[in-house]
Amino acid sequence: MGHLVSADGIEPQPDKLDTIRNWRDVRAFYGLASYYRRFVKDFAAIAEPLSRLTQNKPFVWTQEAQDSFDKLKSALCTTETLVYPHPELPCILDTDASDVAVGGVLSQVIDGVERPIAFFSKVLGSTQKNYCTTRR
Image 1: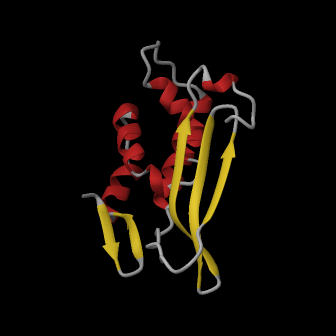
Image 2: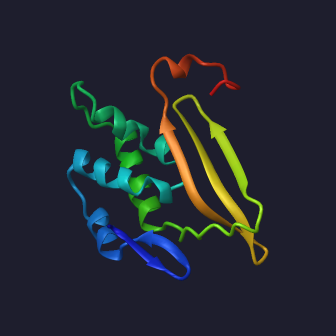
Image 3: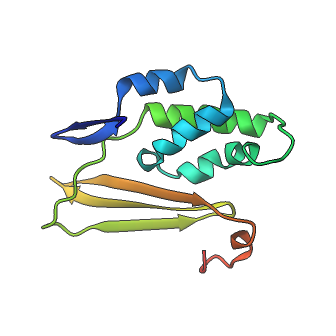
């Protein structure tokens, strides 16, 4: 299913990361990267310039898109192993909102170290971008 599952947790398969490192097709890259979005903190904010390129608008590759592509590739290739939740431990939920996306991370302190269980993020729609910060 595209994941390496071990006693330590869940992470992307190494051969899929090799594919990401050598990718050239933006739409296909964005699709594969989106599949692994739960492993990348602030995925939606990082990928937002690429998301705009997949819409039905003229395709114009900008420096912003290149920076997003490079940063997303790097983030995907250096992902953290997501730990399994421990039902007996309290969870920590951190959330954030920017002008273009919202995101969060669910984590727990395990053996004195805060470890991520999952990352969540979403690019805001045009209407949602007009919401006040607290509403986002």
